[in-house]
Length: 229
Image (cartoon, rainbow, N blue to C red; front, side, top):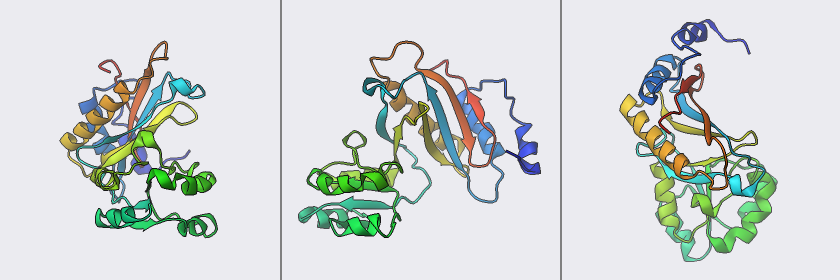
């Protein structure tokens, strides 16, 4: 992949052979985020898990203390009183069965997170082929299948993010924006790492965290020392 002049300049700041302490890595990533927009800061964690085995799967959610810096749109599938409750709690879209054709046939995907009450999962299940590959399928482990829609919406709007292994056993998650202070990014990073460390599958033998890389949307990757985790 060919990078521009700007990238080449900031890439010189990063020593690819060094594993930085988290605070130093965050400071560097902020310095290398020089795009004209507010870049997202992401963490990429390579694990020793084998996601093909259910007992080695990692999946959950964590509320970042300082949010993600992104305005998250929430769609809630519910019925009865729960429809009104979801609207009152600030859901961007609320509905039931009538939303299925809109998503299935019209390709409507103008939302970032889907929450569903358990009694709606039969309906939502029909959207598995559309929502599944995009990581939008509600899941009890992530707190997005629940009767407490008010709490679910509040957590998501406050900066709750989901983490899960991809096909290559790596977890990719945003921890904020380049405009965040180093302290805010550090707090978010710590909250994420605490959750990831706690999520270690008991069935796993060998090293759990193989590598951690911090990067901004357009910037170079900065390796983080895994020693303290």
